[in-house]
Image (cartoon, rainbow, N blue to C red; front, side, top):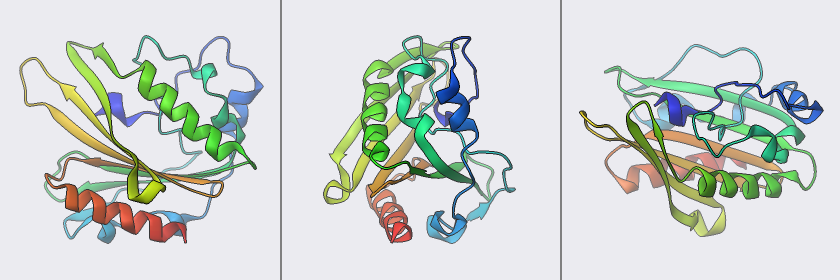
Length: 197
């Protein structure tokens, strides 16, 4: 899931001050992040990450992606992240909460929509990455539900759900390996909404 994990940190030669501003975003309020128990009994918080949280929608392997085309991320005031692992060692989950300068959270949502259009499907190392917007008005318009899929030539496909929620100038993005049930995704999304207050 490295491809869909995003935030690979690649720098382009044309990166300007806006991209540097993103890297310098302050750490945010950890209480906005889901606890491991919010994901289920078998989940555990991974080691704490140091440094600024990446923008969750970086797609460095997508040939149509240029980091500088997405200006909102350079207007983050703070960002915080947490990784989660299951006891059985299966794919991790990830949660990023970002707070933007006034007016920029909505522009961030527009940037995410552009990424999902430009990088809707692309090849990586013999596999095909695709993104589908399952619900553009998820949780009565509070956010978007996106399904990511990596189709492997000689292995089982990998499915990941992305729950992006916006409240005011705060954006919460949860990445979950497919739990096999929409109800589980909905339950975790509702907990993420509650964390936003």
